[in-house]
Figure (tube, rainbow, N blue to C red):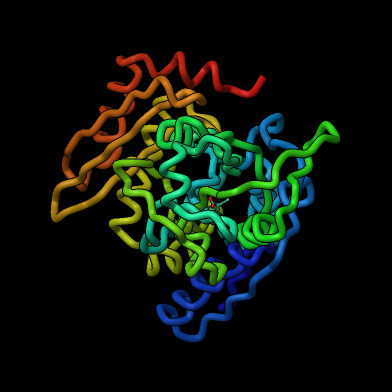
Length: 324
Ligand SMILES: NCc1[nH]cc(CCC(=O)O)c1CC(=O)O
């Protein structure tokens, strides 16, 4: 049996898709997995903020999804974090979630800058590069003097730009930078072989990860039963439960792709613990909610956490951050 799986062609995305292929080959004797590389509009536009067209997730995933719907592909690889959490994807389902990689964010520094120096200065005089509103907000909470600059590109490209002291071009023809530091996902850096560049790993209590961070998702057609039964073999139950709980928070909050929303669940035995937060971009307004529930009813827990965030004023912060 042959399974064609589509992916973006960045090194991170390819590494994630190869992990899926390895797991499928181990779980399904005789399967032939073909990796089909897509150049998405999100990758070609290296300057825009990606906000006007439905956010990062929208740009990266639309083309690959259409290929699954048309039957050209049986499956598509997505970082769960990049999948819109506030809208349905008609005709498609997440057929598998791989076991979660580390969900934390990390700090990467340019040569000559130490963590102590950054800490002692509270960030004053330094520029930190990120495109994520959530990371920008947490960065300003942790380093109140820091300047956050818009920064884009695949994981390995971003580190290269940092090392070469390159400026980041902007859509309006201007430029910002160079950056002194980057905030990136630990899992992404590890996937591209740059784990040695981690200067500091943020505790989840300092910087709560994005919903779904560190989880690789495999999407397929809802009515493609042969593919669904194959993907079920590599589905990791704990990752699936965390994904369901964290994404239910996005759903309740109507969170767009680059929302200032964080959500992170852990499972211990039959218990699930879920923390989620909503921040405004200057890091001044911060609402965080934690609850425990049954691990086998993750959506119920996600819903309760989302509703409590709303009761505490989350909607106002989210709506003000929404791209016009
Ligand atoms: N937006 C790009 C993206 N999508 C997923 C990851 C990291 C890996 C993951 O969360 O699965 C990254 C890179 C980053 O945020 O630094």
